[in-house]
Image (cartoon, rainbow, N blue to C red; front, side):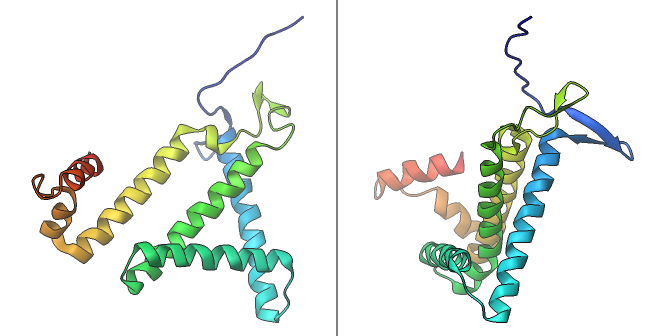
Length: 174
């Protein structure tokens, strides 16, 4: 008997811990975090011991490359150093989470008729939470650096002097 394709829009609850629902995408996100923490613990331990291999070199290359990109975008090095850990953490966490979403058999193991592991990338709550964190962090640092009036000046420009900048500022404000 063919049951057809089942599409689940929301994350499905697997069980509860102290009244808090544990969903399949939350479980996958926790596994991604454990993998990421394990990988970074390995890298830090090996660097402290002075041992290097290709994986450690690749990780350092990625960190240094992204730090260079952030330093190019944010002219103040002090602010760039404060923003970099958050940006790199989000990048590597999303990378590991997305890689977990392409694992074969991710949906095949089921508990209470729900897949045990579901890609966190398929959960809109994850995308929304990351976007809110980034938005608040950017605005916090912009207000701290430019002040309230200077921050508004980034969005509202003179359309006669800089029409493209005025349009871009309006889109960024929205």
